[in-house]
Amino acid sequence: MAIRKVARLGHPVLREKTREVSREEISSPEMRRLVRDMVETMHEYGGVGLAAPQVHESIRLAIIEFDGDDERYQHPDKDEGQPLLVIWNARVKVLDATPSGFWEGCLSVPGLRGYVERPSKIEVSYLDERGKPKTIVAEGFLATVFQHELDHLDGVVYVDKITDKTKLAFSEEYARYHAEEGEPPIAE
Image 1 (tube, rainbow, N blue to C red):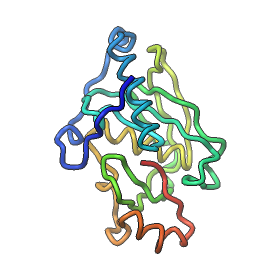
Image 2 (cartoon, rainbow, N blue to C red):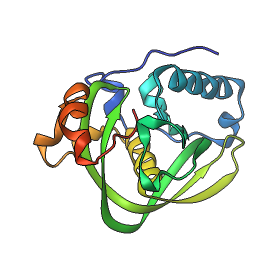
Image 3 (cartoon, rainbow, N blue to C red):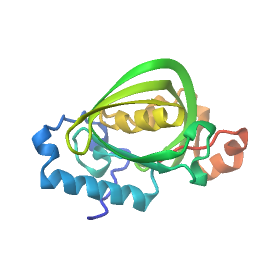
């Protein structure tokens, strides 16, 4: 396993649409190694998710994992946390378009937070780490994390989704001026 270099905003890989991966590729030693490296990278940088383009791989792969006890992500609908999900070739269907807003951060946009509203409930169809079809319904915090990570697979970064540019702040200023508004940040 290895910690990978994270692409930062401005690197072209973050703006590319990714390619789907075949079931045969998913089970290859190279892809298994990539998943292990991504998990290690996500843990090293303290994220709750990571998409393959963020580690310079233009394929439809993302991972999500977070602990419900992590004080950085306290939010009423965060639930118990999310055990590791390996998500290949994901497709999203909006089930409830009612906006749900969170202050988001991103490992590819270090040191900044921005307030983004996204659909509050989604259904995600994907292949798991073994290439088996899965479907999950996510709402609130988890739906936001999914949408944030899966946007990377289409060349979209959370800052593209900020509608009120006055709600983009450095992390220190977020903590000082905006965290008091009751809006906890979500992941990087």
